[in-house]
Image 1: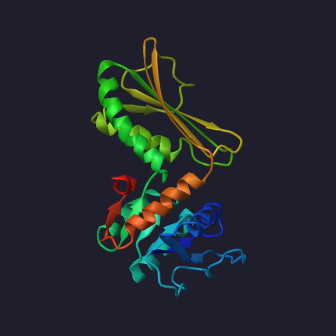
Image 2: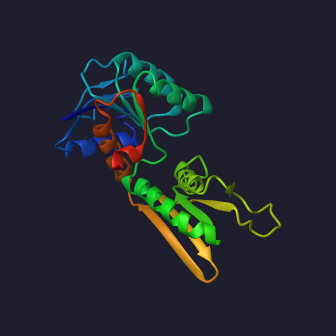
Image 3: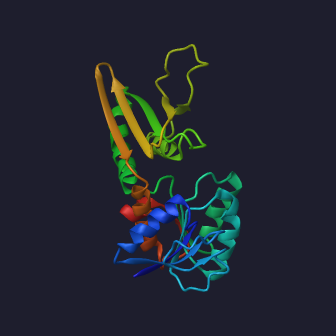
Amino acid sequence: MTKIIMNGCNGRMGQVISDLAAKDPDAEIVAGVDIFDEGKNSYPVFKSVAECDVQADVVIDFSSAAGIDAMLDQCEEKGLPVVLCTTGLSDEQNKRVKEESTKKIAILKSANMSVGINVLMKILKEAAATFAPIGYDIEIVEKHHNQKMDAPSGTALALADAINEEMNNQYEYVYDRSGRRQKRDAKEIGISAVRAGNIPGDHDVIFAYGDEVITFSHRAYSRAVFGKGAMEAAKFLAGKPAGLYDMSDVIG
């Protein structure tokens, strides 16, 4: 049984993961961390990881970038591994995660916690190795809800990176063609963002040449797909030595 502290337990994803954990025989949320205890959880809630006096194996973090530094300090002090799901980290914070994970605690960080997206990344590497050398154009279209602040999504960039790394980083990313009066370059990956309604997350990766179009698609119909990935990541990370891990380690 993996014992979990849910950091950001009263947020949307915190509540999704709490519901998933209640049905999982191999994991349990033993405590939550949030600024406000709204009294809606079956476990005790603390204002910080430092104040939490409940024994646990791992922390799942779905909070805000503003609180990441303090949370990492507290997890390092307690020797708690962290599944770091919060997005929008600064360059300095990402640098700190890389440095401190190699020395102090195990941290798992991934652009997208969905198991499906991470399997898709593996598939795209193989597809790119076949299609890119023979001239197929590559485009990525991502769609998210109208409250999402960043564009393109971190997942779209991760999909592009998976392709580009397979092709020895030959490709340039193009995010906006409105200011370009020129033909598409052969060595570019176009990335387009749509923001509308309550779309949890849609990603299409298109390989096109002449009259042929091959599209790899991933649709998230609810946030539960990300919560499920975070739960599997927590089970994987518990007991692991210091190091920086990602979802590719979880899916093998």
